[in-house]
Image (cartoon, rainbow, N blue to C red; front, side, top):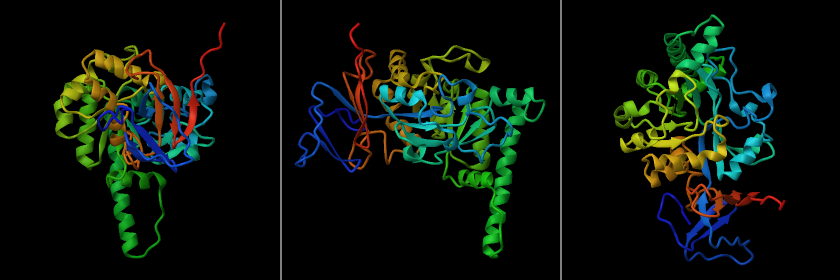
Length: 382
């Protein structure tokens, strides 16, 4: 058994009661009548956590009909919610379970400077409402090539990096003014017209929601830091392809990086320095990292394989395992529920045929809240 945030336990037992882990260790008192799952000769780990993906909003094999990632008609999409576009029938959810992923943060895309609200969900459920772990979980924003291309093609603001930063800056300035008006109205017991987008941005300003900032290039990462300093919000760098070039600054400011996808081609200028070495460089500098597939850019069940190949390129093995379990849970504020095996956390447990960092191992059985949601079925002979 590998709890991740504590030492491995040889021959241990996990007891799940009412969907939560109630006991863990070698000498656990198993109640009479409890369902017993024999995991002899298997590796028992917590479900993996994908901190940045588009499962359910960017459906596979559905073409335009299943493409709900970007509402590219308004640069400020703070009022938008990924929750409202998730289809639990997306094939990506089964893929996630087959790769040991039980929790993911679904985010809008990077077509807008402010893309919308993200949601943390479990990877099994009949409706998305049954799957929600935390909503909203953060607010998605984008710097760099994508938003300037989208709106540049429309011949409107923002068509440059200057314009993208200006949209974000103006939105937060408006949110500061909105907050002041709201406070005044409350103190004077006056009526006040609420604005859904402004309400969300105020929560970011007050530190309640992290700002998930899409940025690849070092200059865009520097802009992300500059904006965060101006408005005082909690910054999480997403992608961070050139983050290793500013690793000391990120470490000093305790800014985490959700890095990836790592199996892609260098399809645009921003990805010129993409490398499997970069997670190790960031981690060695003291930056907390999580690895992402950015599904469907990289299929979500390859999350663990990205971690494995990063070990090959210098990432510490323990950090690699943490980068898909405890670290993403902590970065996204979900560590009170998921990311490890310990009493009080959700009973999200995966039984592996062997070391999950060995590419020949596979997830055999997956449990979410103590309920089995996936069982590996070997192909039929012939």
